[in-house]
Picture 1 (cartoon, helix red, strand yellow):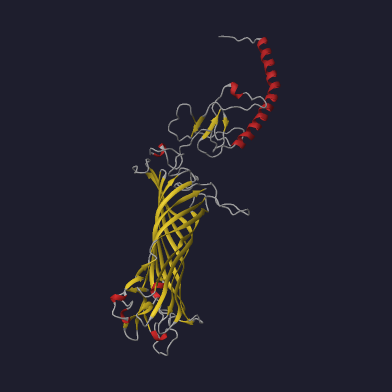
Picture 2 (cartoon, one colour; picture 1 turned 90 degrees about the vertical axis):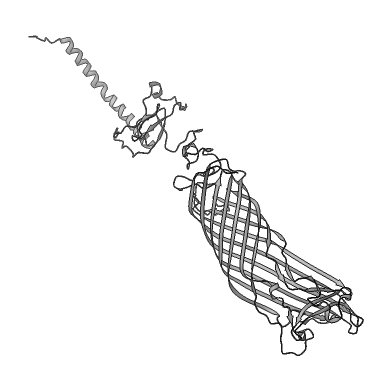
Length: 545
């Protein structure tokens, strides 16, 4: 049996120690509560979701006043679901951590820690490149140029909620907002294209003919078809190539480029064609027509000399055509795609992306044309006198309609290929003006020329028309903002009126000024519609911001 004898010295030491602990404890607890309150406010402000890694005593010492701490190490905290933590990284505890009644916020994904200092989500250290942009680069499974390359989603990342790449378009990161001050809308473009077009020629009947005096038997064959030579008309005119320009402008309403506005204006330069011929009778000049009173081909003489008729004169023909058009439409993103494909001739990257859009808007087109024939005659034979004769035929076509379109753009590296198919459906307002005048011996002008007689007047009607268009444009990105383009455009327009279709070939000579009394008014006016087309090469520059 062992007997324990208390030691008074031991009791005395324990008592002294207890008194010291109880004396110091209130001050320590007060300090701890003050520090806990400060840490709580900091933690709430910084939304710290996990505990940081343990640091050395030197790293926990406060920095001297006015001295900023420099981050020297970087560690990532993985979520509990991560299968393994790479070396140098700390795995977040799977249990809920509470301290001083600070609620643990919901999981926020990955957090970057610098020496125990919590950095808010979204902060990226300078020089740190996030390779998780819309699947472009090695992390996407394709060998590419990385997130900063041009192509696919390069130069344009509008966030994770866009759903797909912008295919080379620049994104400003915010939607367009109207401003009181004059400023360009956010995320827009402007382009100018030079046009080199070929248009549908205007068909006109034979207007001026020629005969040689020794090749005819008399006046009845002078300048009369089919034996005479056609100097002007009898086929298409105004069929040479023409230059012009097209201006495009547009912007997006949202940062993800799903709804936008587009506008354009197109103009072909006015093409003029002229013809002139003069003679004193050799060769013979004439204007052919069909005489409804005799039922035979006939002609009006311009220059002829057979001993009785001594006529010399000048005939000139002027023709012109001009076309303008434009459109306003809303653009709606319908589908997009991106991924990997084998490299092609112009792009050495296997990354690609595409965007398809539907367009709905308004379109107008205007086509104005005219043909005029003028004669200046002087007779010195048995019936002396002077004659000034003019015939003028002008037409106007104005289309207004709903424009429907579908476009698709494919981007491979610096190259892009864009196609646009559109069709406008609407009304064409058609106007035909026919005027003729004759002045004899410098007297007052009388109504009527040679082909503009009983068919004179201004006539107007509305016709249903369709106006389809096809565009194919190849582009090369020169800089982030500037792109060079070359392409093809084809336009078709149904139901238009043209001057050549309203120049008559059959007339009643009794109505030539001064008109004789006759009941057989001829020619009579009637609308004669046809179609029109224009197509050619385009080349220009596009600027995006």
